[in-house]
Every structure is written in C-alpha cells, then in structure tokens.
Amino acid sequence: MLKILGKAPSINVRKVLWTCAEIGLPYELEEWGAGTGRPVPTPEFLQLNPHGLVPVLVDDGNVLWESNTICRYLTGRHQRFDLLPPDPLARAHVEKWMDWQATDLNASWRYAFMALVRRSPDFTDPAAIAASAAAWNRQMGVLDAQLAATGAFATGDTFTLADIVLGVSVQRWLSTPIDHANLPAVRAYHERLRQRPAFVTHGATHP
Image (cartoon, rainbow, N blue to C red; front, side, top):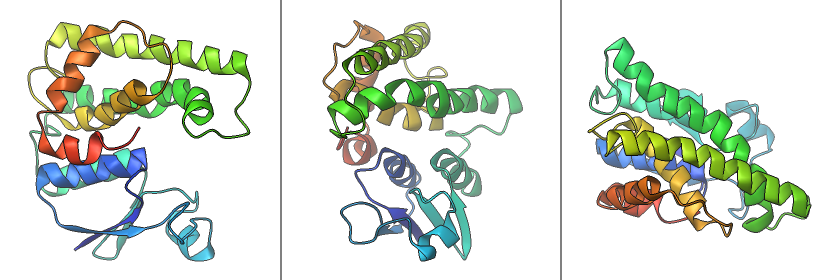
C-alpha cells in the first residue's frame, strides 16, 4: 500500500490525497508536520526529503517528494491518461498549468496567506499584505480568462490533473479574507469542482 507522509490540512498533501481518490488508490496517511507530534525537520524525515517538507510518498520502497511530481507519478503509473494524456502536446498543456500553479500563483499568495490565515508574526507588514493580495488577484485573473475561454476546466472540456492542483488553489483564494476580484469563471469553476466527491473530501476541507 502507498504511504503518504504529511497531514491532511496541508494544501500540497491534499493534492496527493485527491489524486489518490480520483484514481481509487488505497493509501496509509502517516501524519507528519506541525501539530502531529512528528515534526518534519528530524534526521529520520530529512533522509526522505532533504527539504523537510510534506508530502513524501513511499511506494514499494521508492521515495518521492514534490507534490505535483507525486501526482504525475501516480497518474502515470496507473495509466490514468484521462488525467494526464500521453500525447506530448496535450500533456504539456496540463503540465504548464501545474507548473504555473507551483510557481507564479504560489509566489503571489504566500505573504497574504501567511499573514491573514496562518497569523504568522513574521508576516505583518500591511503594505506587503496588500501587495500580495493584489498580485494574487492578478494571477487568479489569468486563470479566470482561461476558464472563461474553455467554459469548463483548465485545459478544455475534460477534468485533468491540472484541475486538482488548481482546485486546491482556488479553494485557498476563496477562503482567505482578502478583497476578492470579480472573477465569475473562477467561482463557476469552484462550483463545478464541488460536484466531484473527491474534491469535497480533500480539496474543499481547508484553505
């Protein structure tokens, strides 16, 4: 059985749990991280992931880290070509949105989220919070334009792995107390995702 090291509230762990649910994979969630009694920066954990971050996947003795990579691996190993197509161009369209989520989108929300949701004492500058919220809305506007064009999901009419990583990000945006830009396609997308039981269980449970 797959072993996933992390904790369910983590946005990156939720990507992996949602992917497992869509594929129908059984797994064991071994709780690691703040509040679990197993802090990640321990020698034991750092042997698995030198960056000290969750999730970590252990599959038949093989270890992987980086949530988007884990999701790609699981869909590829189980030949879920509906989620990650084998055609190079179709796959690239899915992966570009996954990479954008992990880079430009994540970078935009970090300060505002840490200040307003995590209440971190290291993120208290009002100007930086406002700048982060504005950048976050701009990036979400990019997604809104794409969703308005497709009328359904990130890459077209069908649900793919891109929608898993973007779906948890949309949930975070909607759940964070900022002034949200008027993005009707994003809100409609969120409602569309809520029709999927795996999103309700794993994607919509935490910010």
